Length: 375
Image 1 (cartoon, one colour):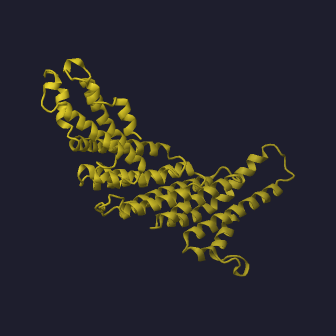
Image 2 (cartoon, helix red, strand yellow):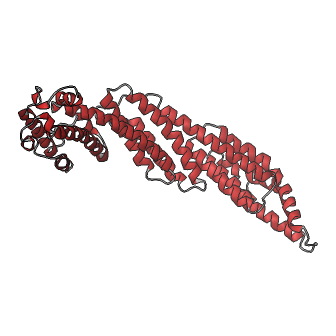
């Protein structure tokens, strides 16, 4: 009987102990499960051949279903010894890579054995073991991630991801690379990314919350950039990448606001902007601070900034890992200045503000200045 031969293979091995008993490899879960499933995968087709020989001269009507039923009944006996051994591996503390390998072995052999015997208890047992193994793998992965994040480190001075974050991303790359070659790769890769990235983002936000606003935005952006770079190497990460991009954009908005405020202060643009917003005053040329000489000096400073765009950058902006993020912050903060300049330019060229020869005061149009600054 099949179950007797299976027990012999487990405990006695082949003739004269060759091959050796499968139980001797019980200390190595991956090899142990492989040997058990490979044995069944080889033995079950032989059982089917025996059945077909047995009914060779029988009436062919409904014979296929009868052979299927008989084979399913023959295979029932191996379910219990197989299940208790595999479950022992699944419930024991194990490395996530081992549990994932066991999951894929069950997935592969379930499909292979299913081509020979589709119905019955063995198919149900393999399905149950596969689901339990996958669940155990994901739980073990969650625990591993949690342990790696148990101590939330303070961000380094250069605001780059901490060693624990880099370690987790390295592990994530390894797992996604392995999962990309598995049969259930799309589902596996999405679940693995979720198990790692969600708690990682929470840890990053916790770390960043203790920092000043600008530092917080730069550190968060750098961590998200590292995550984005990691995930962008793999398929099926589109939704996750879109969410990371949206969160990154929010941090870029924060940095833009901080950088624009710094530029306004450094260019002494605050008083001019305040006056422009007040519509109750008379002609602008009569208001202190809006003299032609002062406006010419402002344009000169703005023009110089276009020639040396990094000169007034906040120090933290230079710590951004992504050059695209840095360029985005620069461009958007300069856009704020250009919007103010456009408003000022229109006001100076408005006859009601009584500026003589306005073209000699603000000699560059907003479009001309925008081209210079965006070079």
